[in-house]
Length: 85
Image (cartoon, rainbow, N blue to C red):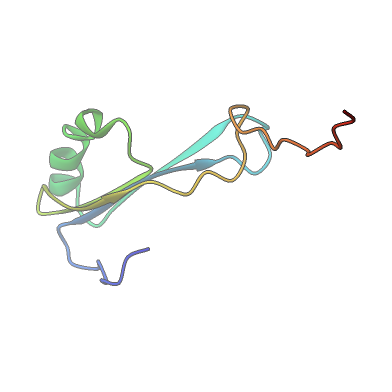
């Protein structure tokens, strides 16, 4: 996913994951080392609606991405059946 380490005072992580115990529910994590940069990142999160995770450094987006889709009601595996002429 990310090859960089984010552990500076101005670094913030926001990630949305499937909740392990809430069925279709989601779990959001917001981790910050400082109140100042947490506020700066929080103001920007709504602008990145399609992403699963965001990383900010000193209020500036450094990384963003989406998790791979493994299960979805929009995915259908067709089973090949023998066609009889």
